[in-house]
Image (tube, rainbow, N blue to C red; front, top):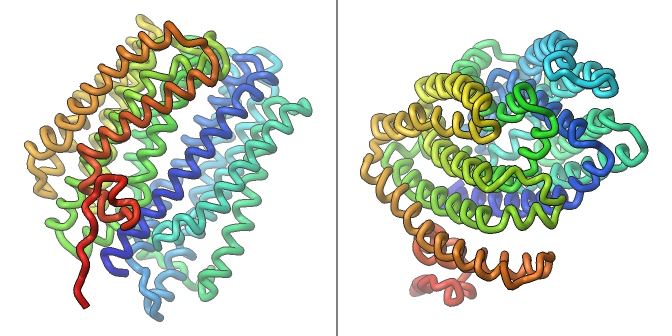
Length: 520
């Protein structure tokens, strides 16, 4: 695949992923009030804890899925040697994933009995909690074995192809969850819905692999012990990094449930729901670019990957600041209309959550490029140190300052670790200039977008005093705010790196110079 077609595949894969994420967000907006209707705040908070447990158990493939994705990305050419290699990679991944799945089942079953006492659950919540966690560990173990089937599409720049059916399954799963809640299944609804999603996803993946990779075979004879060592040498450090990221980004809920209340888990989760969706949107850009970055790092050298990093850094920082100011301006108004003001944790909590979103998005951008270059050990160990500091500081400050203390702990832990260490690693291993990183890539977009953001913040607060608090007013103001920020970011920061993807007919509208005409 050429550089241009590879870039376009990653670009359109990102566009499709973004579209699906936005639609999923819209579905979540509709479904969350319905779920809250059938569950009180404490029960809904426990359901959020279930999802955090799922996320933790999902990590215990020890980085296998990430390593498989990287290996598959390096074997895309359609020839006999690569076909044999794909069979080896997928077969090895499924066998190894099965072994890790057994470890996960054991861990889930050992942990489950302690859950009711850890969170002091009332009897009607404690009774289903233990068997639900045990059953979910079985589902996660099954997912370990199927991950390679989905990874091959992402690694070969076919994100939209696999993403479309999985998106449909996700929407159906939400519908199944609400239907089960409405019929009185309570917390069991989430377990049954996960089982439904796993089964349907597996059927779809098998069908698509048979359609697009008919030569792919999963068999014991393709198992490669040496390949396991190669993949896990890379994957284990990715596991450490994933574990640290899970602690840094999502352990807040577990801490809130333990030292505060499950009801506050619900309030906190709804307050930060939109910022987290924003972070997922931004992360998907990086996720879709990873296979291309791995190829560039292996086959095209440091100069090429350094150029891509500089472009991606400006893109991610400017988009994260656009999202930050949009949410700061509109999130409290949105939550008031969505589920009621009693579910908003306060503007200070929102500001801290947005700082975490921007901080972690910037760090992840650098880490993804280090991963693509194969520099995983140093960044992973640093992430583990950050995670330990995060829990320690968050628990200490959370007991004193409540929700805000927990978020502040996340911010402080990052400041003393990844915020300076990742740029150092980029400078050392990729030759990224620290001036380029901190001034051109970071400070200029942050300061530039913040100037227009402050102006809009003041303007919106004045306008809201004269507008009724309803969806019509909100949508009008949101359109103006989003349009203004988007235009500003596009013109100042994104026209350059993204301009060559704009079709000829839209270039004049988007203020992009026309493509030069090549004489025949």
